[in-house]
Image 1 (tube, rainbow, N blue to C red):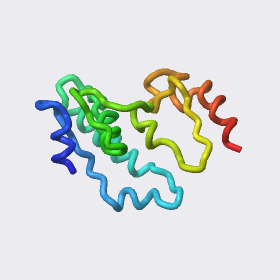
Image 2 (image 1 turned 135 degrees about the vertical axis):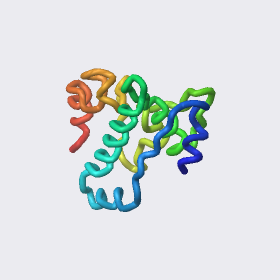
Image 3 (image 1 turned 90 degrees about the vertical axis):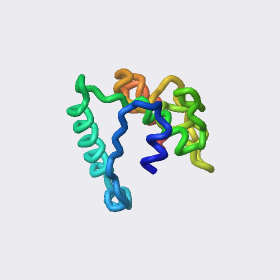
Image 4 (image 1 turned 180 degrees about the horizontal axis):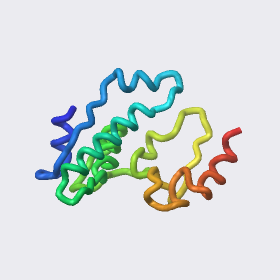
Length: 132
C-alpha cells in the first residue's frame, strides 16, 4: 500500500506513511473514539514538519488520494476527480435507505473557515435539524 501511495503523488514529493495497524483501528470498534488514530496522525505530521526545511507539511494530496481509494475516482494531472467535501466523494458519502443531506459549500476541514466546515455554527444549525 505504501508503494501505491508514493506512486500516486508527483515525483519528488516527500511522502510519509503513518504506521497505523489493525490494532490501532481495533481500538475504535464499537463506537469508541478515534483518538488513537488521530494521535498517530498528529505525531506523524509533527515529525514531518520537524523534518521539513520550512516546518510546513502539505496534506493536499490526502484529499486526492482519498477520492481514489474510497470511490475509485482517478487522480488526473495532480487534481482530484469527483465531487465531495475534499475528503469523501459524494458518490460514496450517502447511506442507502437513509435521508442523505448535501450541504453545498461545506467542507471536511475546519481550516477552510469558521462557518464553511461541518462543525461550523451555520453548518451545525442546518444539519442538526435532520438528527431526529
